[in-house]
Image 1 (spheres, rainbow, N blue to C red):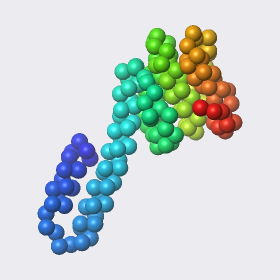
Image 2 (image 1 turned 60 degrees about the horizontal axis):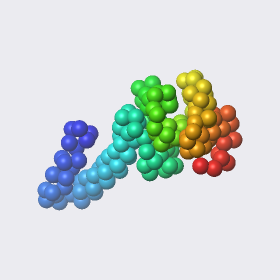
Image 3 (image 1 turned 45 degrees about the vertical axis):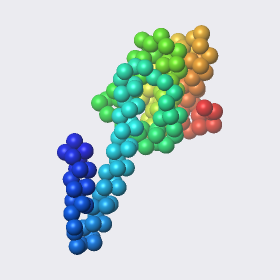
Image 4 (image 1 turned 135 degrees about the horizontal axis):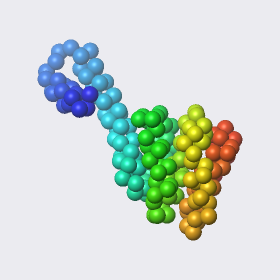
Length: 163
């Protein structure tokens, strides 16, 4: 809808003098719904871009529980492409901050997705994360440990783990 410029069409229609109150109410409702969806899309799109570029930092979306709850199903797109890229980052990045954030994000996926533990296990993440348990950076080690704990315990039992 955004690509087809629906928000602009709605604004243009609202600018016209309509005598039908129901039509104006419907246009206002449609405009609000579009704004909400655009905001949700843009936050996940920013996250996706950050992951695909392979340069992760502690931006607010990584630590925001609402972001994870609202966007967890987006990780299923393209056969878990974003999750696969996060796992590739664990193998290829040398930046401690990027590695720490990738471990944290994988642990968030395990925590929030109903089948997160199974999916991450199937993608052979355990070995990759275990290698980072001995990393020289304490930040990487801490987040790798959190990820492994959530992987072993699952969401139900790992909910008490402190982030």
